[in-house]
Image (cartoon, helix red, strand yellow):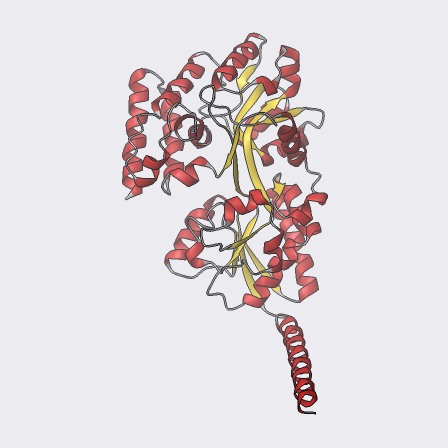
Length: 423
């Protein structure tokens, strides 16, 4: 009788706790209605329109008011100012820096339901050493070398036969001889940063100086080989003559209209934009090539669409509800399609019919025998914060003067700023 009474008490207690927990969840859900959360993003144009439409749907469903602030090109500087004053939005995009820059300001979200839905590639970018996950990342940014398949077919080049930068140089010569511009890139930071690892960091390359880069002792000696290769391509006329002054809009229009064969260190949104401008064009997505036989080809994987919650937010429940809404497959895939990235959540993959995803999967199939390294963007992992602007200026310096003296000046400029920013 005593055992029966004890068991009955346990069951009654469990039932009460279950009811209490259910009641609490219901109350929490009701309590967020009428709250206002601030969400900071760096979207512009079509991406902004798609995001705001999703926000409106969330507001209608939850009763939460969402104040969207768009910082655009000034996003990074604005967020640095807000970090300095410890006054951050309830939810904000980490734009590639959830671990390296923002984690001390973010909540650990590893126990959220959607955190178990990540692909392995996504976890490699956003999971901290202790297992913490600070963001909802609905999409991956993947980048390599984009090629115009129509031009390559005309010239007789199999894009999947290009494995080294020497192979690439030979392809450029054939493209140039056929009357096209080989390289579509303007002078920009990405030229010096996005492919640098295939020269100076990864296994089997001309140099493997990653450790020195990370401890601040790198002298940019091995980086000279990359600068000399670019100087050779500039001398050979493989870039546009107005590479120093051309704007992003013209770059997309020229590539979409079939004026150039390759875009180095790009992918995602660039491809979507070009395909929108010219639906009949055909492209392929390739890895960034190795500096020599036996070196690693490279695809950078970075944070695409990401949203973290400020650890000191006064509206945590509403912010988590917003992230749960954005993580739903139909919503995550809608946002991914507008940004040209690849879905990062397993449940979203069946919805991902975007052009970038199509080319990405085709590349994985065609390059199954290639030795490809998937890693974070080289400058984010190996360079101190602030080097992107330095690379941008260094690129202009190189295009203005790619003589030996010009290369000396670029190398010295990079080293000086690296040492200054590393401290």
